[in-house]
Amino acid sequence: SCAPRAKAVGLCFLAMVVLGTGATIFQKFQAISMYEYPIFLNLYGAVVQVPLFFAYIVPVLVFGTSITKEQRAIPKHHFAKLGLLDTLAMTMQILSAIKLPGIFLVLVSQSTIPIQLVLSGNLVGTRYGFNHHVSAAIIFVGIIVIIGREFWFEEETSGACVALDLENPFQCNNETNKLDCITYGQSLVESAPLDESTGACAWVENARVGNQSGIWSLVLLVSCIPAALSSMYKGILLRDKILNIDPIFLSGWVGLFRLCFTLLILVPSGFLFDVSPLDIPANLLDGLNCYVDVGSLGEELACGPLWMNLYFCCSAIFGVLTLFMIKTQPAWSEHAMALIVLLSAFCFMLPFVPGGTYLYVEDFFIFVTVLIGCIVFYCCVDVDMNSLTEEQDTLESFDNEEECSQYLLLDEGDGVSI
Image 1 (spheres, rainbow, N blue to C red):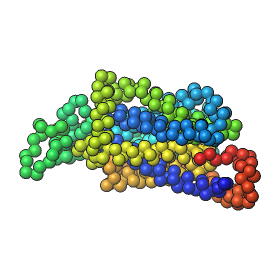
Image 2 (image 1 turned 60 degrees about the horizontal axis):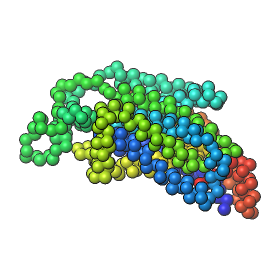
Image 3 (image 1 turned 90 degrees about the vertical axis):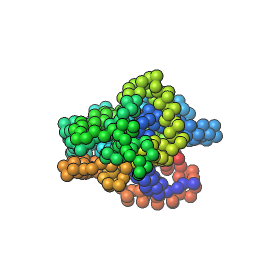
Image 4 (image 1 turned 90 degrees about the horizontal axis):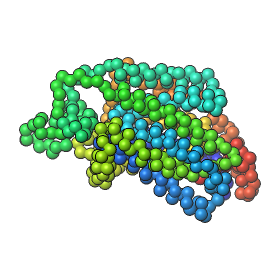
């Protein structure tokens, strides 16, 4: 049957906002609960998506018609390039999520906007309006200020929690008071004396420590370059009216190559967290044991499997919906991204949300400025509600499926494949 496209677009828009916001929040939650195993997190995301997508692709290739011969004939090196770009972007983003507060993940990742504006303008000749350039400039300057402040300012505290186990140097970083620090990983008994020398972590009084957020913010900024290239490349493939490529077919092949490249960079990514090549198998096994058991001990979010699975489900479905919207109604996808950024940033500003951070007055104004720039950029694209309503009336006027299909093939969106 010929379902009204306006209704489908509206439902996809709402689903994008909910799932995109969830994916952003759950990415930080899973990083907190599995902070000792970032390599496992990265590999898990690459492994699980392949059978999920190919569970759709294989039956459609055998029994369906939506994946055409033209799509199957696409040279696989195109998918390999996208897989490499996604691997680089996702690896750096997952590793950064371990060290950065949630609000940093939301706003610094918006560096994709000015980067994509420059790349698409120079590589494919995309033209942007004045509002796009102004908002992109605001975003870029704001993010540079955020990262610069993290590099140049040290945080003076009453104390700092440091790990005694050099094999897991990051395990104590999230503890902010002495009691939580020295009892990390231990069963807390109120009547028992607290012995600082027997715990996994030690409390250093009157510490003055450099803030590592600057380095990892820079890593997250660099990850936006392959992410922007990947997004631009996927947009070109999806808007090809001759190929009319199925978004899930594209996601499946890109995911397969991402898995291959993720396996190749396990060793280099391990060095970032002091995991030697010989220790990688043991680290992956420990991560798997943590995943199937109860998660990490001593953290505010101890249920690793829940947050990992929620993040993966939201991220996978959100990715497919994004490709679908880029193919059919790119303006609506931009507006969905504006709401996702706004809602995610608001959540991480709440004091009771894990992964949030205390904002000084100057930090708050900088973050709000970047946030406004993102919303203005995403909302610069006009959405013609009247055209959607008229199209819905046109579709409902057809008497049979053949007339509707012919109309959709002539339409700018080249039809919809779900």
